[in-house]
Length: 343
Image 1 (cartoon, rainbow, N blue to C red):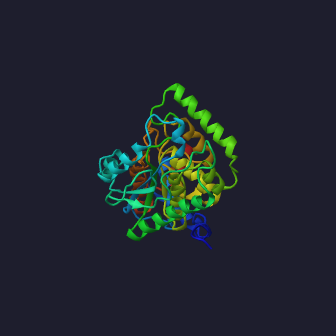
Image 2 (image 1 turned 90 degrees about the vertical axis):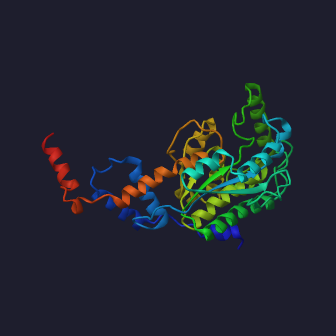
Image 3 (image 1 turned 180 degrees about the horizontal axis):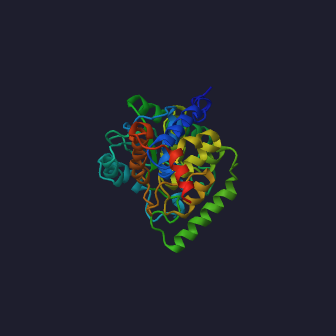
């Protein structure tokens, strides 16, 4: 089998015994059941992903930012030229971008990968060179890429995940460099946004992607970095590593990954809800409730890394709180009985 097929075949389901044990532990901690809301759910979820009833801290963390250019920029759908992509990649490498600052604050390493930037980036230090072509073709004139290129994009995402796993990886955040296919994104005017919508609608009519075939969707209207992010998610799920999604582009990649392997959804958590209007629709389709809603629309993985302290808090609570028995406090069942008697 191919790398993609092997990866998909390795993706299982959440570990039910570990989740049951984590849920039982939550019921024994010195708090009313459910009183810590999503934190309790997150701790149980991480237990299911890792298979550990009391997961260890997620100390080895990476945010993977993938970059690629889109041929559809020739249709005037962006407020900025495609040259900005290469400039931003250089800024990431120089540690001058927002994601670099935010990742430093949560102790996450930033991994930047070129999946198809339309520029020579061979001199950029520490850049992961996985370019498939110097940008996709113009999807307003035909498929963005061929099916082989789509598969290669996915497999290069898997490869990047495996490379990071060998360095040690407990949690991965997925993000993309700011680019041209999301809503108002880079600051389009109302007229520019209407034009972009018309171009996208035309590309969909022209190419007719099959929504049940992830490779077909990627090939006809996708981007190399979107395929790479989807592959990254599939690779993480196969290794039982939690994935924290960033915004709209990461969400689109998650939809693609879930089309290829529906089980991957269980290994994803939405770091935030982007200000891009389509992101809420993507999250609803994935069945994910975001942890944060801060009006962000930058990309780069910024919303994902901001959610890491919430995961930290959930696991610290789960592992460090005293139980009713160890603290000598009346158990939850006793407290519930007393509450009923005073009602």
